[in-house]
Image 1 (cartoon, rainbow, N blue to C red):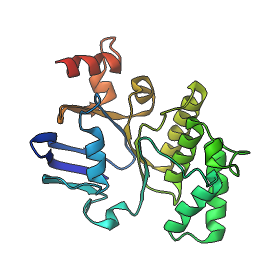
Image 2 (image 1 turned 30 degrees about the vertical axis):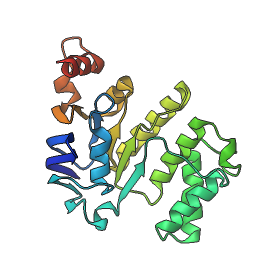
Image 3 (image 1 turned 135 degrees about the vertical axis):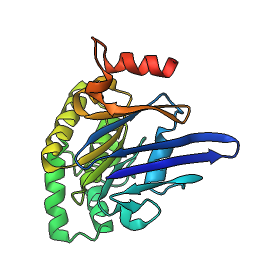
Length: 234
């Protein structure tokens, strides 16, 4: 579903991503981990063609990330997601559906289902300027699910959520496994990653340090956090 082949990104003299190669299979739950500035978001931007690699290549569903068709079945939640304050959550979801050319009838059905899935029933018709950060994040995840994508790319999806919201988001993501969803996740919550994901990649200073199953990386009484700190600190 996702393929990076020696992907490299330079910004003038700074190398944000350095010769990174890995793949994510269909149905796999994958987390890319790294400290701030490690290159995680740059990789997401290259996958979605917000920026292009200096060298190497990336593809989604066997289609080059430079082609719009590669994003036909992708849902995306950005870091620091926002909704225009004059829109309600419902209106925002509907506008996302319109951009995907979903019929009004189907959009209404999808919006009802998604509002329920993200736990925002009763607040969907109030304006976004009344929402907490966590409520906005829930609608952001809902917007990523519009159109029933095959791949979700989520950049810090639990940002701003309280412990109950984090648990509910984890349960939602776990339920999507049964639908064959593929998930590419950036997160600092290593304990949640360990519960949800099959495989992880750890990146630092633009270089991929490891990419493997969690069961292969975490052993002998360690936690994912232990492994992460050890690798990043060298």
